[in-house]
Length: 372
Ligand SMILES: [Zn+2]
Image (cartoon, rainbow, N blue to C red; front, top):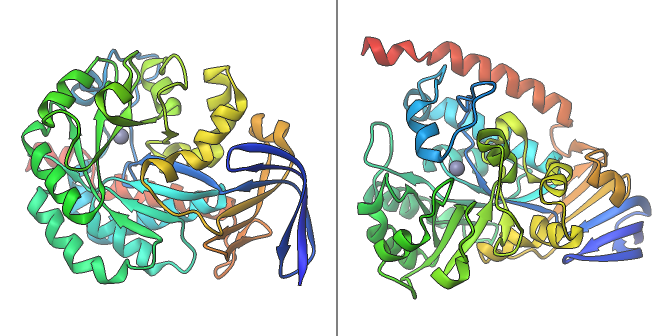
């Protein structure tokens, strides 16, 4: 038996100098983060965000209705094998970036298959998107898949909830989603206040607090107090900045952070520098939310989750610290910057992501919609 020693540590959101933790062999790192980083919102099948260089959108609906995608997203989601391959790359990338918990929207069965097939994986909250549009699931469909897979998810590493797209696209499904989440002992996620004040409307549509299940609102860019509306908030500062050139004015009211498009921009573990520069406030408050935050938002356990890095706190804030070792539930999943069973590095996975994106664009070009 040996020890992991580190010059600096962030433990449950607190900064500590000089730590020593029991480990199978003696090792030394510049920085230890316990638990690892948590990513409270990601779309693992998004290969194209429809960003137009120079365009600053006012709100999510304007972006959603006017973005020019190169790919047919519904086509990608309908392809179980491709959707699952994309999710698998997202889980790998997250771990190699030190992200030990992810909350994923998109197609449930694809995400579950990917997660179950991997030896090394982050803890996961599955929040399949429901919407009354082509290529999206309904609440009963999600309930069916959740029931089929429940027996594989009893180890505390994963949980299934449901994701209503937004107040405008899915309001009629909100109550059913809340009842399903209640049955699953889980949560309902929803995009909210992404450029427009929507908390009042969300609260009204959900029947007012207390709700049948917890509501996790994603984005929460406007100056509304989520606690007043009984909503837990995940902020996506990185994608907010890309789409709207702004994010919420303060971290107050935010429980955790999300990355939105992990295939394109990476997970929260790789965004610390950007988040710190966008909020320009209380670094420890940011780090607490980037680590403990989404564990708290989704009531997930974090025992035995840890990241060890080369480069101390200052390098982490500069975006230059390197993930060397990761454990999830006390199991070693990344060692010397590589996934334990496959030996893949972050660079290897990034290359495979580029190949998969190219393949998705080739298989499902947007013209297919015009032809069909
Ligand atoms: Zn989103």
